[in-house]
Length: 317
Image 1: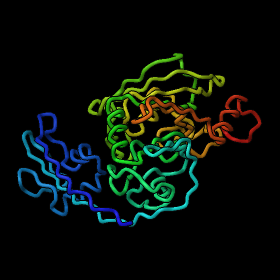
Image 2: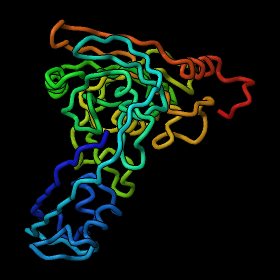
Image 3: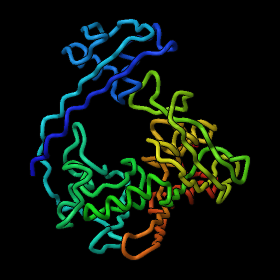
Image 4: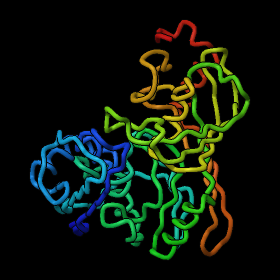
């Protein structure tokens, strides 16, 4: 099918005292969730103005400057159903619960229009909610590409609205298992640190005072000596990369995380060892439902190595 055109985005800001002297491209990238190179292209093509006039990307903002950015919709792309094997944990006329494998992208994006969960859903399901748009049919929430585990899919708009409202109200329960570096000192705790775009790498997130509130509750499930800890994390908010950023911020990054983790001691894992093990929500017709899913084989193998202290494994600790 051909994806429908999205609406033009229009962003307007008035600079405050704390914005004085900040480069225009940095200022906009932080606020509209684009990279500096993307923002520069918008500026260079005249789609960004300050006080009604076109300026350069390096323009130093002043207090009370009025910034307007107009982002045209992307060109439509072809989105085709694909016969990709899915593990469907539960399905009825309203929802489907999927056990997503690591390595599967949830929805198409720039440079990645095939072999996603959405392509698979278009093949397996005759009906999907259209609220998420043609590029994200049925998608109520998401998991990172290399995070495995449970996702709920909406098969009609009514179910999508009901589930989205629950997520907004923080009524959906989402628990994750993560194998992290180091021995976590406290048996349980809460990480309450705001998360925003990294100031220098727009593809990353970071704990930032200017970020949005992010709360992750954790509890230790198992110690693997002093090198590793298996923890369960419960999301109270849903920021991008939240668990990975929070755990890295307290010096216990997820094992195998290529972005926020460590270069060594990854137990042979080729992806971050983060798994959505529990999902619960109020089904629009059937009431409260909860689902558990076991760790996938690669996670179990890495955990077994951690338990054994990784002796004589031939893999660098």
